[in-house]
Image (cartoon, rainbow, N blue to C red; front, top):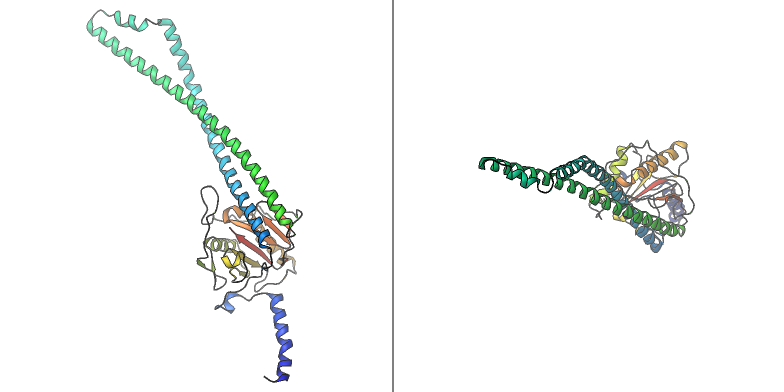
Length: 339
């Protein structure tokens, strides 16, 4: 290559590089052979800070799942207490009836009943009737005692669940404080208001959710529809749910570089543009980002959302929205990370 040609190409290459940084990645269809990078710059984040946030946030989610389970159990136990108490109240008059009958006949009532028989056949019939009466009384007493025991056991279990609820509420408060402390180290300070819309569509529950409300670890095993890389089944489910909710502008998920969620297939960046990434400049673009974020926050428990970053703000289940001043200010896309 001649020197004049090199001098001509040098500024052209510089301009192309600058435009690439400004506009962001091109859609996956433009280069199907290589993964399309996302718009999220997070490679410079302090790993110790990120691990601290991750640990505290996961502990918060576990406590929240246990709290939700405890509350559901309390409702069930309260119904059992009410049903058992109603049954006991209905059977209680029979105890008084049997006591009154015993008082009237006296302790020798049964023996007198048998001796007051003029013939052997009469004796046998009276003995059979006495056995049946005793059996009925025994069954009634057993039913009453069983109802009483059920009521008492349900009340004990309910008291235990109330204590469990307080325990998990304290755990959530503790982990919330730990998450906020870790966030302060990356500039996440100050409450910024919320982006949660009650009119957002309700997403279907993602795969890997346990009975306790926790989320099982998943590998990067599904083809990423936005690049030639891979994503987890839960990320693919969330991607489809966001699309199903009507958010169809450009999105990039898998990215080979960086230590965090993108190369693990656990993150997507929802651009405000139909192609590539650039900061919002119109009310429509900003509202699109707001609506994507609101949808993700409203359905965080159903999708397994780890955190959301949008427009200089970061959202964790443990803390809600906080200001954010990381490597990227996220004015060009909504970042979604999953557990």
